[in-house]
Image (cartoon, rainbow, N blue to C red; front, side, top):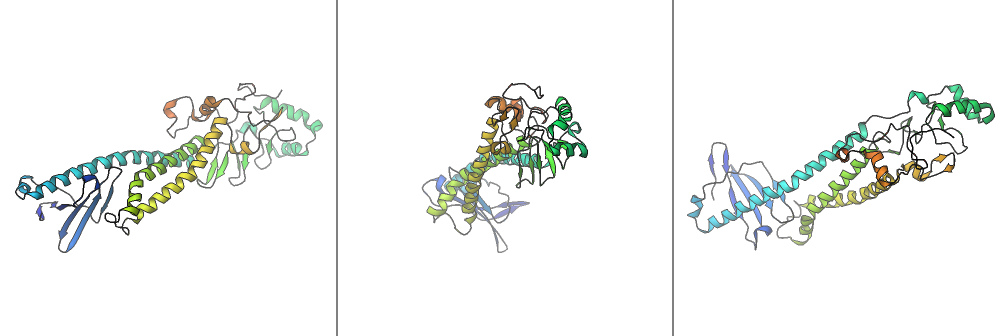
Length: 345
């Protein structure tokens, strides 16, 4: 089929390679102009699509009548047209969910990094002289001061000596589950860990976003690996239809997707387990201490309630990176008494 032109349209030569079925074929489009060849190649298959094009061109279907006169050419044209329709459908099937996953992934990543940092309220601030009194550790001399603090602050956790947890650098009484980050230089509510991948602390304010970030990264890697699998196999087995130099990125993409899939899987599954236990990374290594002693299960309310502590009560917000966690990050219900009323006995 020769090239024709009408206004802005290019009529391209459509050539279908001889093959046993359309699903195993290649459709190649060529547009020649002044010695310059613009080509587009569509790899057809039930498991996916590969498209490569040296220039963006516009294909306009010519009248079928002009090809019927050419006998066998008409049959190839119809098959090629059918193959192109399959490509468009499969592209939509792949690209729509892919871009939805990418949007949710980037949104969660952004929220993890730039969410509000939750620090201790002014109620927990103490003076430098109070810090000195607490550091001295003389319970008899400071018993009245400690009793005053315990009656006015919602704290249940203690240090290993049985006294109040405090931070000399921030000059605060630490709320339950709060810890000082040496990298960020502040005390954060319900601190989980400092993550170098997002360059910030994972804590009460962004823990839900961090889990969603891991979840959507895991789904995206799995989706890419599965849709690329057929072409990865063809790269090694079908030399006649895959040009290895031009298709090297297919093999590379598959390896990268699998590598990140397995690495993210371990971290994602670990944090899902922590969520089911209502436990932070720090608490999994060092159990919180209460008046009755260390207790890793101190905040474990049961799997369902633990999940809702982080993701909230409304299922509508569970998979969306919008803050919906329960509480204020200062006081937490305990497994021991299942109440949010905090005071030392």
